[in-house]
Image 1 (spheres, helix red, strand yellow):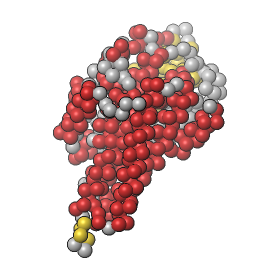
Image 2: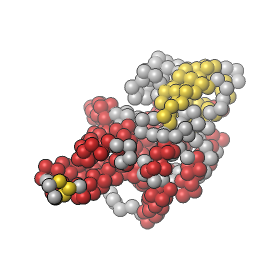
Image 3: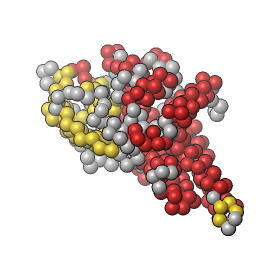
Length: 378
C-alpha cells in the first residue's frame, strides 16, 4: 500500500487547511456552530468552490475524486478546524444516490456537489441504538406513490435540509433487514414536523415527524424493501469520514497540549520536563499515530475490500477513534489543568467534538461488538 498522497490530494489538503485557518478561526467557528443556523451557508458554498464536496465523489458522478483517500483528506482538514458544515450529509446521501439512484435521481448530485443543496440522512429513530436494521417508520404504497409515517431523531441540520434520505419499512418486522426502503424527500414537503436544537459540540440537529407525508412513486430510491444494503454501504463512508475528522481534531489537540507543556512553568521550569507528564504525552502521541494507521486502513478498505472484510476494517476504525478520541480529549484537558475546560480555550471545543464523534453511526462498544460478530461470521 502506498502511504504517500498524490500531488492533487496534497494540493487539496493545503488549500482546505489554509482556507479553514483563514476563514474558520475558532471564535468565528463558535459563533456559527453555536448560533441559530448552526453553520454558514456562505462558507459552505465556498467549500464547494474549493472542491471539498466534489472530492467526495467520482468523476462519472460529477465529482473529481471519490476514493477513500480523497474522502479522508477532506475530512481530516475539516476536523482540524472543527468545521460544522454539512459535508457528512452530502457524502452519505450522495453515495446512496450513486449506489441506488435512477438517472433522474442522480441529477440531484449536481446540486449537492455545487453546495446549493443541504442533504441529510434521516435514519435513526427514538429508542434505537445504532442498529441499521431497526426501522419502525412506515411507507404504504398508494395509487400515485407512497404515504410516509413515523419519526426520526438527531437528524443533522434536519430543520434546514433541502433533501432528506429517509428510511421506512414497507414490509417485515421492526428489526428485519428485509423490508426497509429508502425515500428521497424534499425538506419542505407538507406533513413533516421539525423540532430543531443546538448540539453539545456545535451545529444543529432536529427531531422529525412524518404525518401522512405524500410522496410520488419516483421518491423510492433503489428497489423496494432492499434499502438495508444501501444503508450498510453508505455507513462505511460515514465511518471513514468520522475517523478522518477525529484524526484531524486529535492532531490539533495534541499540538495544543505539547505547546502548553513546553511553555507552562512551575518551580521555574517547563512542566514538560516532568517525567510523569512526558510519559503521558508519549502515550497520547502513540494513540494518535495508531489512529492515523487505522484511517489509512479504512480508506484502503473503502476502495479495495468487499463484504465482511470491508465491514470489519471500518468497524475497527470507528472503535479505535472512539477509544482514542476520548483518551486524547481527557488527557489533553487534564494536562492543561483547569484552563483546559474553559470556553475561551479552543481545546475544550476539540474535546467535545472528539467525544461526540464516538456517538455518530455507532460508538466504540457498538463497533467492538460488531467487529467480534463479523470475525466469527468470516
